[in-house]
Image (cartoon, rainbow over all chains, first blue to last red; front, top):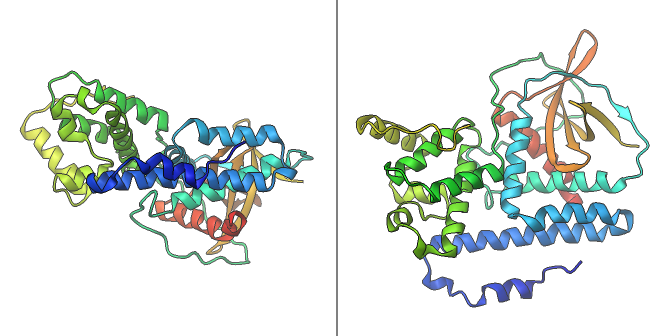
Length: 267
Length: 76
């Protein structure tokens, strides 16, 4: 397996004069470079230990990152981990010991978990509003009472969000594109924990797809939604927070009697 | 030998157990899909240990942060 070299990355971008581009595009390119770093990082880690590992497992693991957008995968996995960790299902904790020759599965799972969490908590890749404070890790073991609490188990895969992006780009209705975006926000906000990340992912897909042939799209669509991220879209429209966006768009939809079809991304 | 637990007919590797603020968190990853990862915490009821979901966003992120803090050296 041939690694991606730094030289290849540089060559890939050498014909792009980013100084003449909108700064947001430069940020987007920086994210792509970051994704390539992640891929190379995983590849180097796994190959370093390849004497202990099964080559089929290594290929399987690396193909996850070859075939799809790296950031999208890590983002989706991180969000899914958060959602899965909130399930209210209660399971008896019965450990099983097994003789397992697949050391590779254990090593890869551990590496992926660490990498995914590291990337997920990265402010560079996935900005997080409320970074937790450093945890106090203790040696003693204690228990607390079971609290079912209110949980949200809705999660959206990267593929589902990519499909939403396709639906937006093919939208033929009469509602303005801002309201179309808002309708998907309503859908993705069913998981408020991940709405920001998911909306950023949605805008990332929209941006990349439009870039392939931007002149083929309705100029109104381009001027309305062609932003590398939802954060950029909010900033460009003068919103300082998601809460403000939600409040203003909700009022506007009500005042203008806009009917937001539930089929927009609905399920 | 690794520890496993079966949840909904899926085998999960127990990657680690970390105690934070007197709560024991268990980190699980599906054996055949390492990107399927989750955290549960252990509660004791009638002398039986159960795994349950975490309660808040900040609790999840604290648990994830603890795992990364403990293991990040492995990927350096």
